[in-house]
Structure formats: structure tokens, C-alpha cells
Image (cartoon, rainbow, N blue to C red):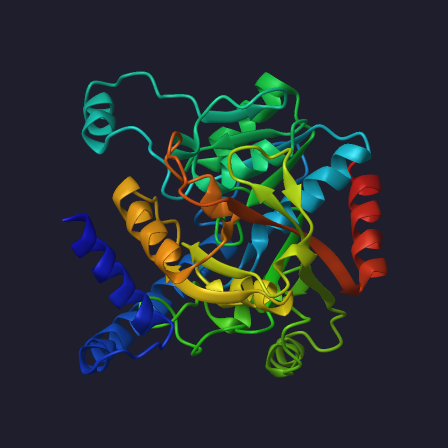
Length: 388
């Protein structure tokens, strides 16, 4: 059953990303295009209702930074959230990250319904980290919130679909004085004071269509809603499509260009054990990932001289089974691989006590600003001074 669901998810992803693999994709694409036009009308209506205060946005008396994108997956958002949270902590702020916790394991829907029917007490948000220690597993927290909690020991990380409730909880219980709304560009009930929109330079707007036919969550002209725009993966593409489109809707807007730089390889089972990137030169490796855009991850390794003899791509946020990993390592051993490499996000979704048959590492990356750093620093300083 699980394999059938996985194949269906891959089939849907092929359509959304225009990765035609068979004629069936083309047949299904036509009704999905009609649904995407309907979805666009619903999205525009929703923003119109919020814009006229028919639907209300809440202010919690605490500054909110919104970080998000127009598309589903693949812009490299998590390292940006991490960078901002760290910078704000260094400036003496008590930061809380609010996340939806995509694909995290929450309360069963039946229990939620029964509690609602019986007027039971509402559950508090799930606290991934209280700023001192991690309190939830990646399965309960979601892979991205768990990774943020692991990398930001002084930051509170809270998961809840209702981020207004999560924000109030962070302020009341932990004294948060700045909230970062992770993947929150489409979350309108909580009013943001600064919005950072990430655009992937290598694939900025997909085929230009909204879900479920394309990768857009909202129309491209909604670029106007962003206070600052960050072009990610700017080192991997010299194309001008993203910049031209942005300047069409935001003439003269100064863009912040950044890229994700490989830092080192980190052992899956002992994060104190690291390897420099140059060990990949002429190394025969196997790679696997469950992320939206695996091309850039694989490109990082190939640029370092690695010879990828086998690669396995799963759907975004895939949680690996021992059987899948056994099969992968069997192939890697037969191919003569000496290392298995995955991403940091995928590492937290590995079965906790799984014994790897080959040395296995994840790629640690960091954000580097290529241009517009003065714009970004100025925006941060102004935001802090305005909200002191």
C-alpha cells in the first residue's frame, strides 16, 4: 500500500514539475489545469477578503518576520530561517520560530472531532524546543522544525497549524519578543511586519501555473506583497527570468542574491565526526534524497569531484523505511560505493536505530549572500530599531 501511495505521489510530482514520464501524465494534466484556474480564483478572493478586513489578521503586540515563497518546495528556505534566527539572537532578541509542521504526526482527526463535539479543552501547541532542549522527535515535530531546533539551541520552536495560537503561547510561556513565521507567506491570520520572499533562480515560477497543475501557491503578481526578495541558488543560474519578472511587478526593487554553499560532510550517527568537502574528489558514492529539488544537492557533490554511480530520489518529505534503505545499500555495495550521502533534512527522517551498511554522511550547507548584503543588514537593523 505504501509503495502504491509513493508511486502516485511521484506521478503527481511529475505533472506539477512538467517531468513527463508517460502519456498518462499528459492526459491528467488537462483537468488539473482547469482546477488550477479555479484555485487561482479562490486564492485571489481570499486575499481580497483579508485586504478589506472581512477576514481579520491578528496582531500579537510582538514583531513578526514572515519568511516564505510563492512556490511549493525547493527554494532553500530552512537555512534562511536559521540564519535570521541566529542573527536576531546575537542581537539580544528572544526568538521563537512558528511552523506549521508539514507532515508532522499530530492528533488523530477523529480525536480532534470528538473533542470539538464535546467542547473539550483545546490542545496547546507542540513545543519542539523550549530554547534549552529538544522535546519532540522529527516524526512528531516535522523534519524542518526538528532540524531548526537541533541547529538553534537558544531558539524556541513551536508547531501548530494555528500560528496565532502558537505565537500567543510563545510570548506568554517563553517571553518571545520576535516571532519568525516559517513558510508563512500564505498565512494571513497573523499580521507580519516584515516579509521575506524567496525565489529560486534556477526554477523561479515553474510553468507559471498554480497548483495542482504547477508549483505556484499564488499568482506571480503577488510578488508585490513582499517587503524584500531573496534570489536563492543565484550561483547555479545566470538566467534573467526571475529578475525580469520581479522587476515587472516591482520596478527598481533591489534584490538580495544568495546561494547555498557546501560546508562539510557530517556523520549520520555522530555529528562530531565531519569530513571536508575535498574527500569527495574522485570518490565513488551513492546518494539518496527526499526533497523537492534534488538536482542542486547532487550538483554540489559532483562539483566537488564525486562520481555518483547510483542515486535514489524519493518524494519530498518522504520518511524512509528500513526495507527501502536495505535495498538502497545493497545496490550501493554492488556498485562499489565507498560513501553514501544524503541531505540534512533527510538525515532526520532516517529510522532512529537503523544500522548503515556503508559510511553515511549528510551534507551541511550554509547561506552566503552574493549581493545585496547591505540591503539585508539595513533591513534587519531598521526592523530591530523600529520594534525596540
